Image (cartoon, rainbow, N blue to C red; front, top):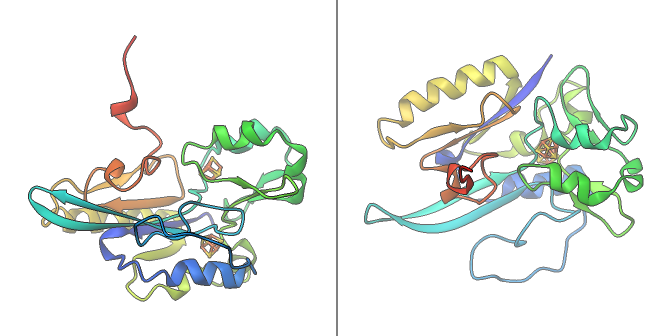
Length: 220
Ligand code: SF4
Ligand code: SF4
């Protein structure tokens, strides 16, 4: 029952249905926000926004693109946040689904250790010091339901199922998309349960879209 997502950003139309469905299912409150000059709202993850449709505008090879990226926790196969927590009561990995789940006991952890460990800049601390992020809708999945965000996506940009099936679907879709977007790629496929397919290099979408950005690495 090892689970995974496949997220094809080339199918995302930035309707934000997933963002709202996430809030509804997880009973997350609306928040005071602000316009930062883009469609992206709120400007970043918060303790009450686990799913965030990021948006950038870019000119690539002389053409305008709206780059949409429905961001969330990747439920890493070997989660750095869990390794740093060293307390399976505060953060645990569900044995069946593989979901990385944060509990209220995360308030006992050093928040900076956990947030700093996440290569995708995902967890956020609430006013009580409790760390919050996507749960994989583990409560739904254990009952045989899809995550709320996947259920609501009208374009099949979001897919969920057995991890192996998602890996296969991702590889198949990549072959197809490459005919239109030669730079298309799957992001960090071997390390995560949430596999993104991007039409262009991941850093064009978001600085933490991929765990390892070769441009940041300087030898020596
Ligand atoms: S899996 Fe559930 S908690 Fe995670 S982003 Fe989707 S709706 Fe939100
Ligand atoms: S993406 Fe970040 S928060 Fe999610 S499992 Fe990986 S390290 Fe933990």
